[in-house]
Image (cartoon, rainbow, N blue to C red; front, side, top):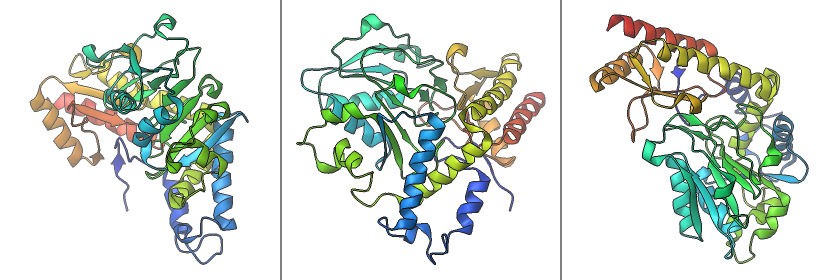
Length: 359
């Protein structure tokens, strides 16, 4: 069969080789006579998958030994609540940087739990760029500073991460594994897998071990980070199939040359589309300011809504999937995560040029 030209924002494209490997093992994983999703999560064959996934993530991101890697459920959205429940003590403030819809949702959940403060925001500018964060804006006694590293809806991304004197917490759901960064600059990193790591169903949390002491014993058991850290993310039945696919994606990333090589390819893919926008003489209008452009989600509009709709209709006819903008902002969006081949990006850029020529 011919694979779709998949530019979905999430769940998103997975490497074809990963899907083929999973397909091969669907009925008989490593001679067990069972598929991975049929294995006991207490069995040795599954334990090997689980531990290998953690090992590969630590290898790819150079995660130090004083950090724990957790495989949780509930998506990034549950982390919006778990982070303040575990880290936001009564005498401290959770500081939030608003750069888009997901950071607003994270703030909304934290406000239900404790004291919060918005320390930077570009909401009034339509979230077209990443806010400027000043050290003077941060209470030295703050519980943490929360950022969203990449904004899928508006197509903006932190080009470099802020340096703060309190734990930095980052939602990296849509750009983890897409570029190198120093894990040691963060207290906690979380990411739903369904954009760059694997399928939906598993959420990765990377947490500095000394922050685990903040988790109160009064928390519900399943919402306490210590529960999962003490039990190697096996306190309850984990999403075994999703973790298996996560392992396969991480193996694929290693085979591609690691995060540094993936970053080079991502830079090239983004440049192809941004060049198509910038060289269109205003036919295509990029949404994000150039100093904040995302390498994962390229957002743009055409000159009229009628042209937007014509573009999207013809793109669909041409086999492109998922290039419509988020329902809250409209327009067009191409999500070009790690697994999206550069050849597909080139085809989209060529389609854009041809559409412009036709109109």
